[in-house]
Image 1: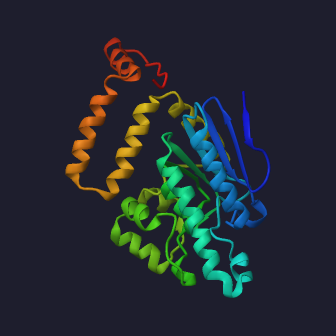
Image 2 (image 1 turned 90 degrees about the vertical axis):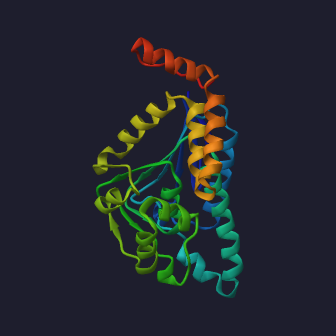
Image 3 (image 1 turned 30 degrees about the horizontal axis):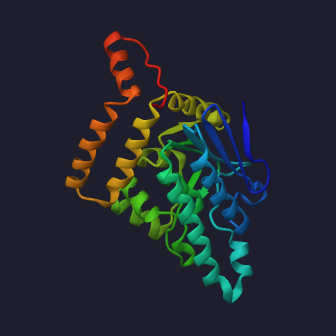
Length: 268
């Protein structure tokens, strides 16, 4: 049964069978991030963090584009107040991005049209998995308007594509085709434009049936690993594997391998 958490406004959110769907909902503005959308995005991520039984989060954009980045018309309207507004706006985007990274459940980004700037490319890079359509396009764009990367992109994009390539993408602002994004690892999968929702639902269902505690710890280890030493990671991995081995899902997984059957995970 579908539970509607945000039913209208610039972000929509519902939860059904452990799968949450978060949709950016300013299609008339290519889902660019204005004040209202940023506030709604932070609220949506707060609700996801508190949602009982959430096993997967799917993030997408309504209309023809995933997200065109910051709302440049709103930027221009701020005049001399733009620096103060951007401090607030980037702080809101940081809160939402951190919530995505910290969410125990896997996050899947479904991308059509443009994914630009921190709100577009940045959020795609902060997701755990990303599926794009053949017509999708990707650009950082920050330095093109005298800004710098945000939404964690200076770390996440560099980890995904490598430091040299990330510097090229940040400094020269090329538009990446979907094929290039797939080759660089920004996308995990590429599908026809009319198959995005179906493939996203299939992947979400696959993950929702998986061992949620194991997924949560795997996410934590991988993302935390971006800012620590190998030795720190080795110690954490050993403790985490030991702890997970006592869970019902771990025992079920081992039994299923021995019995040559598909495991049934309960998230415990």
